[in-house]
Structures are given as structure tokens and as C-alpha cells.
Image (cartoon, rainbow, N blue to C red):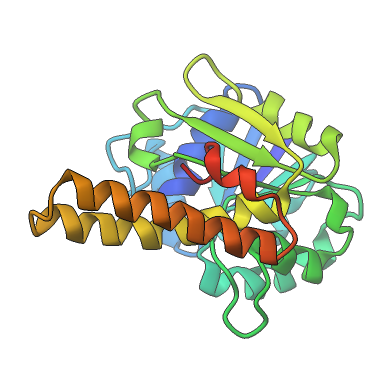
Length: 239
């Protein structure tokens, strides 16, 4: 499988390394010439995760058309603020049935759309778009750890990306609750920041437990209101 990975930040760089273990080729799209040159010349991203050496079958380009040419699967890992624009530019070069995985978390302010919905609105065929969420700090994945959850309306699309990214260290669990997984991905860090403030000010374990528990309850209400499954919040995507 040839994989196009659109984005070259820390998260995209970490997942490029994961995908390279099972893909024939991973072509990363980078906005910066310096980043692309570093990946091609030194097998390292000079801006993010600089200590992480990428496999030899990972290459980079600043041309979207080159990254997407011949891709059997596409992974988007660009910041939420730029996702729509990049998808709009990429759309003419993406075939109608190519499976797509969204690594970006967030909710588009103007439309209220989740990130997979932003992608689908630009490239079409929403059913072939999956989303990855869960505990996945990029720097820890590079050291070989942590779990994740992939959500996809089409089970076959989910299986495609599970087979691509699964390893002995990086565990993947499938869900069909796209809304639940993505709302959790967008909201959980808000609660995590409040937890950090609580811990930093010495409020104690009781307060921390209260914030986490009620925070999960609040997220579950948002998931339910948007048509997702509230119980998703009690799994890897939320907890």
C-alpha cells in the first residue's frame, strides 16, 4: 500500500513512522521546504520530534499532487485551522473511493462541523472517511506505546487503517460512533486543562476526581445531543 500523509507536524510524523512499517511507501506533504528536505536527506523532521528517525520508505514533498499521486490510502494530519483549505486544494487529486483517515481533532467554529465532516464536505463520499482518537501523545508513540481508537461508519474502512497502523505497541480498537469519538477528541483537552490547573494549584485529589467525572458527564451530554453514543465517552476516546 502507498500512503499519502498530508501534514508534517509531530502527530503526522509519528503516524508516518507507524504506517511505514506496513506500507510500501509513505509520502508526507510538508508546507515547508526545510521540513521536506530534512525528511528526505536525514530521515528526520527538523522541526518536530527531531530525535525520531523515520524509516527509509518515508519521503516528503511540498507538492500536494505528488504526495497524492498513486495513493491507496490518505491520512490528514494538518491543524484544524488549515484543514478545510488543504482539503479543498487536495480534492481534485483524490479519487472517489480512496479511504481517508483524519488525525485532526476539533470543531470548525463557523460551521460546527467535526473534522471528518470538514474533510467529507470538500472531497465527498463521507462513508470512506475514518477518524483516529484516544490517548496518543506523539512523543510517546515514537517511543513505542499507547492505545488508540479508530471510528468509521464503514467497518471495512476502519479495518483498512487498523491493519495499516496496528503494531505490538500501538493498539487499535474500532468503533462506528464517529460523532462520539470526534466530540471526545475535541472536548477532552478542555477538561484536561482544567484538571491541570486544579493539580497545579494544589486543590487535591477529591477536586481532581470531581472535575474529571463531571467533565466526562458534560462531554457525554454533548455527544448525545449531537447524535452520538454517550457510552463512547467511557472508552479510550473520552476517558
